[in-house]
Image (cartoon, rainbow, N blue to C red; front, side, top):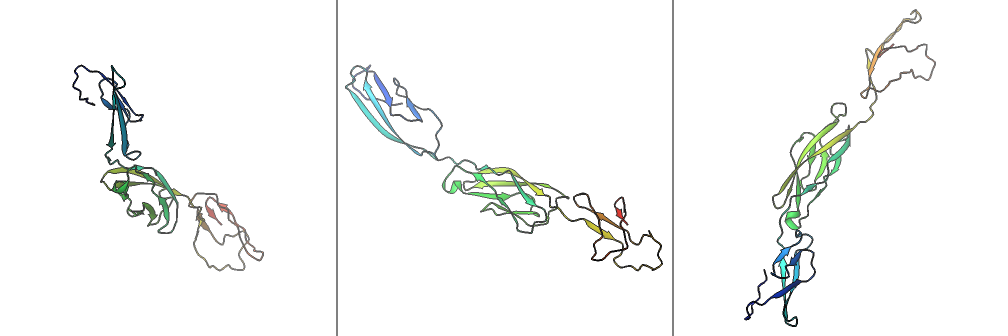
Length: 231
């Protein structure tokens, strides 16, 4: 509240304030009040100018100027990255990306470190750069998604916990061939349509598999498929 010192009693005054988005003043009581929340990061110093006018004679007036300094309150960081992805069979130290965050504070309060909370056997987070790296083998068919728990900690000690979902991308892998033997002898008098070799296969993605004989010469053999065994 703005107080006026005057020898005359029962004197009435009118108060007005320079245009500002944060403060206003009651025209009769002189009470200064806040119109909207203050934000240190957008404006830390607010100059004010109050005009006081005698209600009986407007020629009598005064001005009072002063400055309001906004104290900075540390606010916690905000996690912006919620998912990352990497191809299966990627080499060690492959980067998945950098964890993105937002912190409205400046100075030491705006310095943020990314602290890893789990999956230490698969991934590594650089606390200073917030880069995420692969440190072990990952296989889409074994597990195609991981939940990486992290803590964002600013220089003022405030923390924000979050979870980043890591999606493992499927890489098309060749089918696996199982042979009972690699070298064999065929007798010259073997009857036609005799089975000389059996083998089976498995495709990691369960995709359809087609088998064929490849040679630079014409072979006296044919392939027959029975379930997942080719003869």
